[in-house]
Image (cartoon, rainbow, N blue to C red; front, side, top):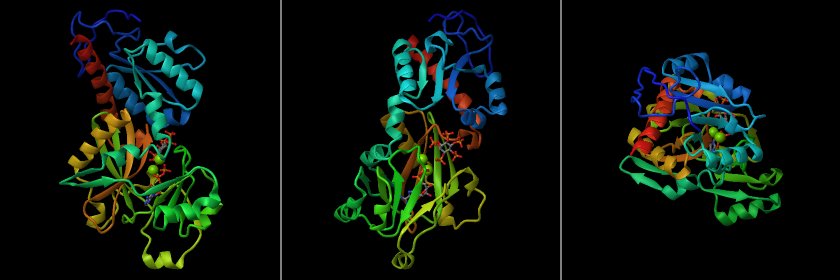
Length: 335
Ligand SMILES: O=P(O)(O)O[C@@H]1[C@@H](OP(=O)(O)O)[C@H](OP(=O)(O)O)[C@H](O)[C@H](OP(=O)(O)O)[C@H]1OP(=O)(O)O
Ligand SMILES: Nc1ncnc2c1ncn2[C@@H]1O[C@H](COP(=O)(O)OP(=O)(O)O)[C@@H](O)[C@H]1O
Ligand SMILES: [Mg+2]
Ligand SMILES: [Mg+2]
């Protein structure tokens, strides 16, 4: 792939005269991003305000036509995608082999790893982060692959404490339940993950990662379950999407010990390590702090390419990230 030489002078981007040949067929563009996203995602992510800012910075977004070979499209500096299916993964893998100069956000294998609720948290568990700012782990959990009748025995052997959150193994499915006794879990359909419920004051922290930038917001979550409530309750209760964007808790009047954000150095260290271990640039994490502690944190969920459109200031963070990716690629090529 060879692109037409052209020198463009755009705000925040320095083009070295004669030093770069990766300028595209899109007039004036410094960075060409091919995207393959669902229409829902296009609406929430590619908002007009974001596209305007991007254009001013020399970034253009070009829709990928899935009915045509990817290599015949572009040329792109970056391919941004969130589509599912084996065929699409194969298209991307072949393209990555053929075009190592293009940054594919993110590699299909790395995405698959976080689409499984068992493997998704494995890297956090292996990391077992502990420093002066606190500890970060994952709630104890058990995977049930088939036979639901084996659940009560498996739960007692593993020594898991009730209540338990039952989550479909496939992370794209959001049909979650809270179980107050393990016999009722026999009613659920494996494959699933059973995770100890951790009281956290009803608020969680959503930590958005965009390359090396992070942004934290508060969202409402499931309320604490008291010992008294647990002793009086039985059964399995389906719960809806409790921590969706509409459940922002940033402006709520919260107890200070619940509202206080996790220390930034801890989040930076965690995000940096996970980015490296997961091989992803774009994800968010749901983090809770055990109620009654000041510094015991748990990661309960990791989402690939989440709803960045709801992240405050995403327009600037994202455009800077795309520019820095292309700049660092150039730098690597020249060194
Ligand atoms: O489309 P959006 O902007 O509502 O984003 C969804 C996110 O919603 P939110 O940011 O909470 O409002 C949503 O975020 P949460 O799970 O609520 O953290 C998911 O990331 C969802 O992706 P998937 O279905 O898990 O692959 C995201 O859905 P898709 O990326 O599949 O569209
Ligand atoms: N181990 C847990 N302890 C306490 N609350 C939890 C736990 N796991 C999940 N939740 C609650 O359930 C919600 C959904 O769970 P999550 O794992 O984030 O699934 P999803 O991928 O559907 O967002 C969380 O936002 C949180 O409110
Ligand atoms: Mg979640
Ligand atoms: Mg999730």
